Image (cartoon, rainbow, N blue to C red; front, side, top):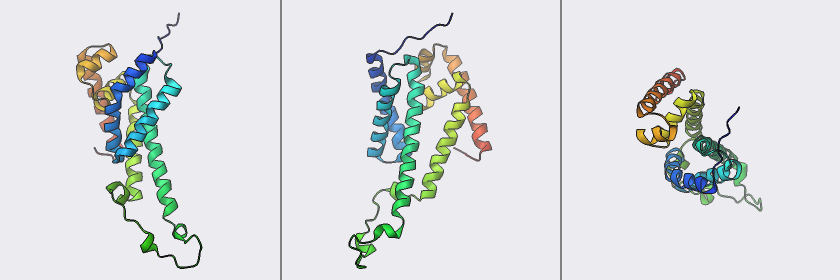
Amino acid sequence: MRRTSRLATEKELSDFLKGVERRAFKRSIYHVRDEEAALDIVQDSMMKLAEHYGDKPPNELPMLFQRILSNCTLDWFRRQKTRRALFSNLSDFEAPDDDGEFDLLENFVAPTDSRETESAEDTTRRAQVFHDIEEEIAKLPGRQREAFLMRYWEELDVAETAAAMGCSEGSVKTHCSRAVHALSKALTAKGISL
């Protein structure tokens, strides 16, 4: 007979989101280097989790949220790349009345933050590395992936991770060690060094 998992209550979902918000923001700001964008990404991720997966078992929420957060971050990078491509064409700088008197230098506003001065190639490369890392994490065996994400993405300590996974602290350390070794090997093979 198949056992069904208990679904998350509204309070459990709310508590989960409150508990993950700060770490998710920290992770997002590390990737996008823009506080407003990071806040938008985290809020979008939380809303998507609540809207589409709020009725899942509580133990599935961390993995689902991490996946949604990753996808929202990649979507942000795609939008930035598209936005840059659209406005890089000189035709986009033509004067509205097209009288030929448009001066690009008068209308150009220099970027003020480092994210805007980053080349599209660097932005794309960073997004690709992020995607490659996520791809390799997804290939890990379930328990290794779960331990790795809780310890290194969620920044839970060994005891918290063991409690969340329902196993011993020694098992968490073993899962994490194996995950780190497997990821290191796979990413090195792809030419990625962290």
